[in-house]
Figure 1: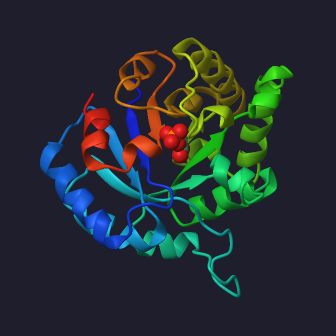
Figure 2 (figure 1 turned 60 degrees about the vertical axis):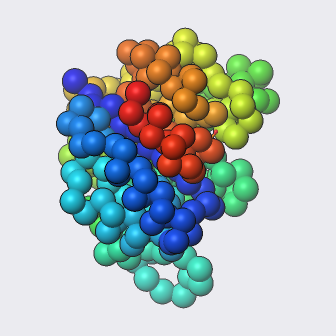
Length: 249
Ligand code: PEP
């Protein structure tokens, strides 16, 4: 049985002061649960605040939205995987669509980030997903398969690496459009099958999350689909009250 993962991607929202207010409100309302894991991906400057707030909770963990693949050096503005781990992150997002499409991140860079995360003993969540043009051209399956295979291509011993996938159609992120549970399931099935070709039965244990305009109204039906192991939520995770209603479904 894969334990559901409910992940909040705050994007560039909630600096340290707002993060503290959020975490106080969220943790007061979200009683410890053993049937799911909650991950909060704050901006890097708010990571210590979120990590401190979650230190007494094994069911709520802190993550980071992005890392550089190098351990240290002349990369102004970047944060490395060991630094993120030192600041309290336990998981890193890799290849989020905004990283790919706004900042030009490539599959090759994602592959280096997955490797860097695994070396730093951070779990990673590799995001894949198609644009509307790619969907309409019938390229979704081949694209997400390529993003999956190339993203994981540099990480050795995948069988013993802690990672997750998130299927996030680009056309559904922040647009109010959501894939139907059936559409999400179809792509999750493709990803699951690729995983089993790559790592055999270990592939059955890898959570595959759906993301794209999830909110408190559609979360339950998406999570109710047997192929959907969790949700990666952006806009609807920024306010504690909204996130409480999703994390607690
Ligand atoms: C995301 O940021 O990963 C995301 C899915 O955003 P939204 O929920 O706002 O579509």
